[in-house]
Image (cartoon, rainbow, N blue to C red):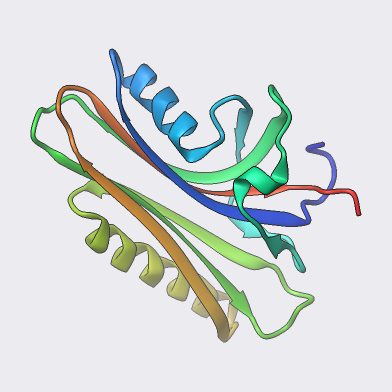
Length: 160
């Protein structure tokens, strides 16, 4: 339930071609494992003490309202390269939250991942927090007709 503080997080990514940009986005969500839920885009904080799991282990109910920080890039330019990336950083203090950053652009996943990791480093620096762990995930694709890439950190509450 979205009103409860999440206890789990998962990194996901997907890509798809589609009939329209929205169809391509929907296909990328399906590819990432979150396509049958209602995404609630949120600002980029991971609650303290969340545990990372695979998105399939979250057992997201169909139609659930799912908090998520994501980057998506769509293009209808055949042959263009598009990419999306997310990064999360955590400090040494387990009482403090983690920080998520998202980035998308034309280009390759390596470039997007380099940028988003730097964004997370800068965000932690702005808070005066030393980084204990920094994790990232990026995806890219060459567009055939209409394509979309999607990278995200999914948050979910699991009853113990």
